[in-house]
Structures are given as structure tokens and as C-alpha cells.
Length: 163
Image (tube, rainbow, N blue to C red):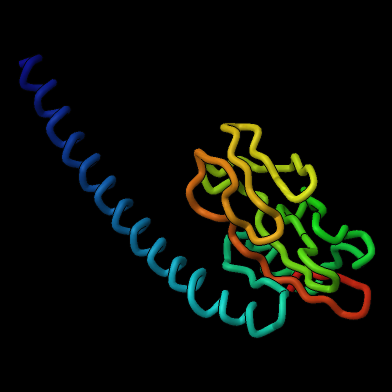
């Protein structure tokens, strides 16, 4: 009777786990598909049309997305050819060329570690050593293989804000 109880208890438990994991996996896959569609194509095209202000691809917290217009810095605070990290907002703002401002997430695309180590035009991940260009978000050194997620900012006069 004890072995029957164990088998009965383990049988439904395994089925339940498989059902829950299967449903969670499907939900995650569908969510990821929706996020990728928004993150690629139209957001990047809008950023290019805006003339340098790079667009948000939706990876920030909902507070970031709802905080449109949150002041980050003055344009004079962002060095040309470099950038500045805003830890609380999880964003780095850069100025690749005079008057051209871009913003990227400071969450490493390798394993989602937050980054704050910025030297010149390179932001580095302390977790596994990935390095990214803050000028265009590209990977400079792995293990990360995907660029940093673009964030939308707006520049009005000498003020830079999250859009």
C-alpha cells in the first residue's frame, strides 16, 4: 500500500508539473514574440526618423515607460564620444557626435545583469565581462551576442528626458 501511495502521489505530481511547465513555456514564448515585434522594426525606424534620439524598445520597467518626460540630464552633462549612466533609470545616454544623443538599457543582454561600469564609450558587465559601445549599443566583447536594447529619449533645448 505504501508503494501504491508513492506511485499515485508521484504520477499526478509529474503530470501537473508537465502541464504547468508547458503552459508557462507557451505563455513565455507568446510574450517574447510580441515583445520582439515591438522591439525591432517600428521602434528602431522611429528612432532613425527622429534624427538620433534612439527609441525605447519596451525593456524598461513599467514605471520607466509611464514616466515619460522624466528629466535625466542636461545636454552639457553628456560628453561627446562618451556617455553617462543613470543607475536608477537603468539607462545610459551617449552623444556619438555633437548634438546627437542616444540611449540604451544598462541591462546586459547576456544574462540580464545590471551594468554601471562606464569608461570612455564602453560599458562593461561585472558579471561575465561583456562589453558594449554606448555610442550604438553594439557588442564589443562577449559572451553577450546581442546589442543593448535602445531606449527612447527626447532632447528639448538643453534638457534630455526619457520619452
